Length: 262
Image (tube, rainbow, N blue to C red):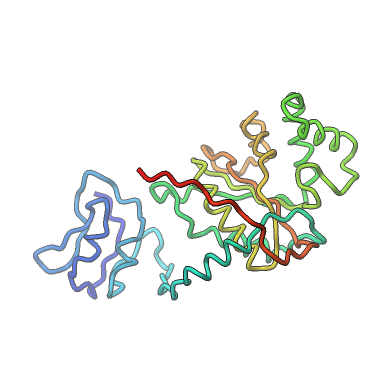
């Protein structure tokens, strides 16, 4: 059995960790302490056990030296709803984000959930190589321009030298964050957390469907631009970001969504 936890003498054997472990990996022994035990499933280090321990007696061996911190107060539903309400897609920018701002944005995705806690998500920030990347995308989409007018517009824009600031795919945006994952949802959730963080920082952006089409049309060629991304990951989310030059002062009406109760 691979031991994944360090269990200190402060364990009081309350058994709370055994109740939250979905893998059956923990059990309270005859000595009144919790122990790792053989189970049909491997521990994928979700951390539920250490997060709920009242004595902070458990830690993950693979994260030795990384301290966990106490959870802060829960945001009120009204505050969270206000954030969701105020967030909107923004496509007009007056300047790029700084390196520090971009790092803060990506840090917002650190605690996003992933399938089986694989944490198999990586990011690329397109900045200095923006025009080169646009040319790369255009070359992939060149044989698909008959599928949608926007694709031909973009390829023509690139072929003309990318002189106009209104890129048909990114508008005035000249920085992109791309999320690579094993499954689409593992990239989509953290990218939306980045989107929400941008709102709190006074930044803005929007999710790009068209750049993802290049990845769908030719994944291998798309990924050739990112040789350092781990094998088995694919681009599933693209966010264009910058400092918005337009201030949006009010919300826009949204339709009520149909709910199917089953």
